[in-house]
Length: 258
Length: 258
Image (tube, rainbow over all chains, first blue to last red; front, side, top):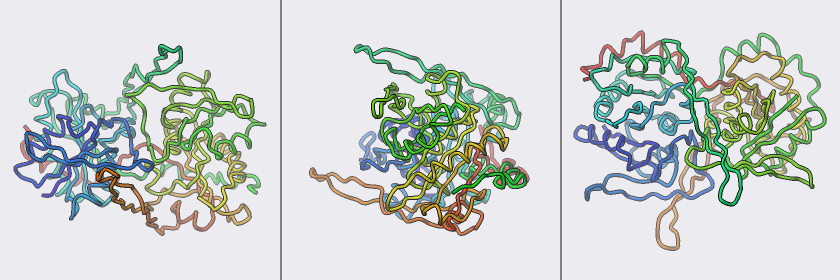
C-alpha cells in the first residue's frame, strides 16, 4: 500500500518516526510533514507566503520531505506535487496528546486527515494521550489495524477516522470502541505579563479540561482506557437547527432587507 | 446590546469598519481583531508565542484592540481578558469573499464565530462575495437582521450562523434562505518557482471552484443571488457512518491488538 505519513508535531517528532518504523516493512511509505512544530494550527493553509520543500535524511538515508507550512499544506502539496500517483491512504500522527471533544477543531493532526478526505483519499488521525514517558510503540502497531479499517469498512466519501489511544501501558487497554466526538474542552486563562520595556503581553495558559461525561463520547471512553475511533466529516451544518429554523419560519419575521 | 466585532482580514479592513458604522448608533460595540490579515488560518490558536494587544485609534478616537494572533485568539482574549462582562453577541466580518462549502473549514472568519459559541455566546460570521468594487454598506445593514435572528430564534447552544451575501447590488438580491453547507470547494494547483539562489519554492495558486449543484446548498443559493444563512456546529461526528460501522461490527474483525 502506498501511504502518506504526516503530522503536526513536525518531521523530526518521535511519533512520526514510530509510525514509520512500524509500517515500513509492509508498505510503500512517503513522509511529507511540517518542518517545524505546528500544533493548534487547526485547518490553516498558507496563502500569503511561499512554501518551501526540503529533503530530510535520517542515519544517512532519505526519510521524507519537510514543508514550511501547515499539516493541511503538507497533504495538499504531497498529493498535488510530490507523489504521483496519489497515495492510497493518509495517516497523520502519532500525535503527542489526545485529540478529543471540541479541541479537535484546533488540531493540525486531525486537519491533515480532513484535508486527505477533501482530496478523496481514505485518511486517519492517530493520537496518544500524554504520559510521563513517551512510548509510541503500541500506538504505532495499532496503526496497522487502522489501515485495515480504512481499507475494509467502506467509509463513505468525505469521512475520516479520528483515532485516540489512552495514555496507559498496552496491558491496561480495555478495548476498542466507536465513539462520538464529545463536547469536552479546555477552559483557558491568559497570563498577563510585562516585557522589559514595560509593554503588556499575554500567554494562553492554565488549561482546565472540562469533561463531558456522556459514556459514548471520545473522552469518556478514553478514561475507561479504551481506544476510540470516531468517524468525522467536514459538514458543519447543524441539521437539527436547520430543520427547526425552517419550521419556525424565522426568516418570515425579518423586516425590509433593502 | 453589547457586541464584540472581530474578523480575519485585520482590524484595518473596510468590512469591519462598515459593520461598526452600521451598528454604532444602536449598540455598545467592542472591536478586538487581528493586527494583520489572517485569512485561511482556520481555527488556529496561538500556543507557542506570546500574544500582544494594542489599542487602535481612528480619526483620533479609540476604535478597538489589535491582537497579534488569530481570529480565535481574538475571541478568547476579548471574552477572558478585555471585556467584562462578556458580550451578548459576537459578529465576525464582514469578510471580503464568501465562505461556503468545504472552504469554511479554512476560514478564520467562521472560526471566530465557532469560538464564540464554544464560549456560550451567540455568534455569526458574515461574508460578502468578491465584486469589482467593494461595497459593504448593504451587508453591514443586513447585520442588523442577523442580530435579530441571533437574539430571537433561540439557537441551541453550540450553534453559530454562517451568513453569506451574494456579490451583487442590493436591488439584485432575490431573497434570504436557510441553506446547508455544501461540498463546493476550490481545487488548487501549486506553482513551482526557483528563487535567485536556485532553490525551489511553491505558491498555492490557480484555484478552480468546483461547484456542487444541490439547490439547498449555500453556493447554489448564492448563485441565485440569495443571502444564505447556515446554522453550523462544531460536532464533526459523521453520525450516519458511526451507526453503519457499529451495525457492521467492524471492530469485531480486528485481530489481536496487543
